[in-house]
Length: 152
Image 1 (cartoon, rainbow, N blue to C red):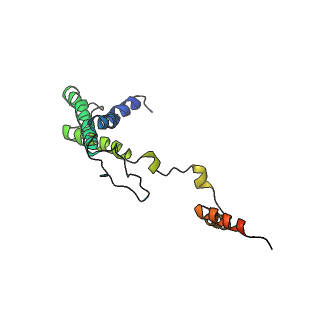
Image 2: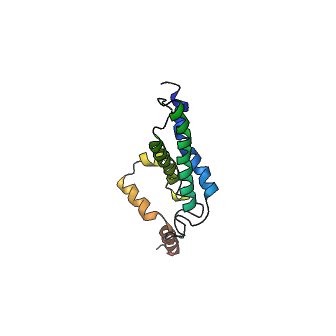
Image 3: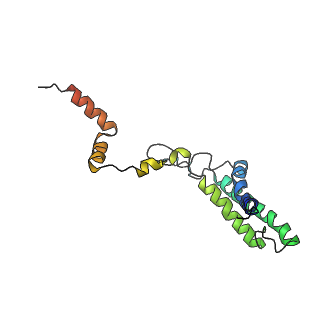
């Protein structure tokens, strides 16, 4: 692998890297989820994810890609560091920036995080049935109910 690929990859991802801080700079206003909540009362995305931030971050990334490409197209048109023609550079950079912002929409507590050990662990049908029957708030009620009974 050529060592030139590492800085070149960073160069191509600069529009995506700049999208997040610029979304904060341009943010504010109407939330993307319009204030909607889930059944448990939690917001879909929260107040920090706004339409103005999404559009501002995406356009900032697109313009950065354009700024990185124009000098290369003028002075070194055959450079492998160029994003391509101006229209392609703007579009590709916008997609990179939008993708970076789209990946940051869900709040961390909204995501289900499962460890690989849990995914690989297999339960016997009996153990799975026992876990299902004895899990949750119902198990506490069942336990209290059984404690109240007298043994004969």
